[in-house]
Image (cartoon, rainbow, N blue to C red; front, side, top):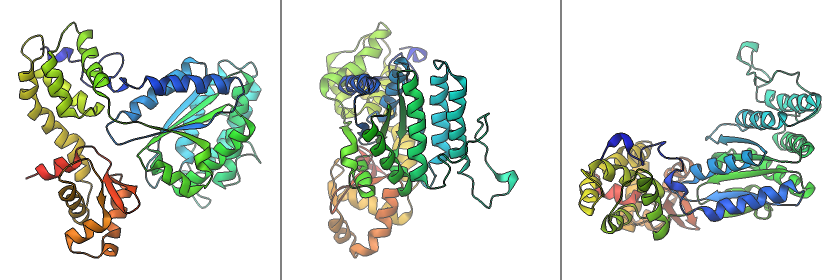
Length: 396
């Protein structure tokens, strides 16, 4: 069929197929928005799951919902070894601009922007030369004595309080959305938990919505023992069969085309119900189909093309980031699990490689930092990427 009309191509369609099966999370967030706007206490939200399950797309949809409710909203993506101040400042600047159009007191908005600027400027090192000092692009004088101590925990609590009070002035709230939250520096995680704790105590209308890998709860609890009380965790997993079929059929039907039931069976078997894979195999099947409807033969013909694209863009790009020692560890995991999406015992990996467990710790810790594996439970390690073990075993 016409590749130009391919509804599975990136950016195609009005609702990405990854959102199929996520109505529970969307409806729960609607409740959070209403409760917080009415001054009732509500926990912040953490979305956890493997790569390829659509967390980032869902996070974007939650941001859109917040904006439709009149909230200020800002979104950032955490990056390893990068401090939180600069990206957080930009995100909250966006949220404050959302609120400013509804606020009747420009002086009050400028006051909060001044606090935000003071917070942002602390991202500069004290000994940095003038030409190297970062400017946040906030066109008001920086406030003094508020959110500018240099202690991220103190400053974040004060900043969140100021921004939340601004939102309360107009009867709404602020949503701060953080993707890849497991990549935050430990001190930033601690500060975020402390700020969320303060907000929960005061009932301030600001919620944090984070998205990250399955071990995010462990990252948060290692930072603050009370973190489990601060957040509501939602595990985002692969789609059930009915939702997976909807993710395929809905975009196809928007193009006034169809797909045979046997082709749906084949697509589900190939994708495993993971939204990223559904999109990859669906796109390839559409391009391979000479006519409407898409048949099981079209899916079979398209599968190698989809697998080739995944091997380069999804699997291969991650494998290339690993060092030789790390690749040895990854392949051992794949061999032990026989390519299945299961965890491997760290002791078993050591035995398989004929090494002492302590000698493998640097490779394992580095793989965790790179987001390629996570600790599924004590003494076990698993891939963060579905089907990664199968890919590793299939490499030449």
